[in-house]
Length: 87
Image (cartoon, rainbow, N blue to C red; front, side, top):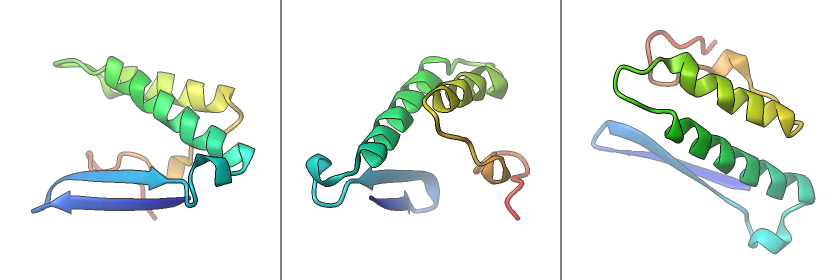
């Protein structure tokens, strides 16, 4: 897998993950990781609303990821928001 992250003129941050060689070239775990993270993104986006709380978005994401057998790296949270806990 390869991930490309970029921003346009400092406004926003976007990334895209690619499976090098195509989906058929990925291990079962790598393909599952890409699928589960995409599903988690959709869960989070569906819960975004004006004056919403961050916890209402991130809790279902974390639950979905952990239910699929993966984990969330909590040391790398709050990307671009408030005070990140990045060491």
